[in-house]
Image 1 (cartoon, rainbow, N blue to C red):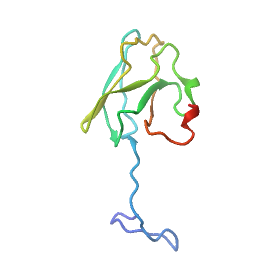
Image 2 (image 1 turned 90 degrees about the vertical axis):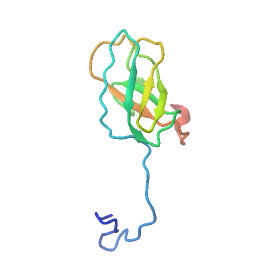
Image 3 (image 1 turned 90 degrees about the horizontal axis):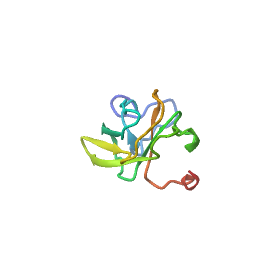
Length: 119
């Protein structure tokens, strides 16, 4: 759509049929810090229509399955608190003993989607 909300193009996609809401973290860059040997709680994560069933994992690379999960890190983080002003994610009482470094904070929707049963 154009800046005024109108559809544009030459002969293609000229009819607007609705809007699309993309559920998930937003903005996509929300850097946080945890300390090796301590429990990890992350405050103030923002997103659109996120669910208390969503999950978080610290990984080398997001999107390639659990094989990229950080060794000696807490398995899966969950929302400890979810509000319009930001969410708190906790890995509970588990202490991460992974080596220091920069890793990816990866998100997975709590909504059941086709193909998720093998993850």
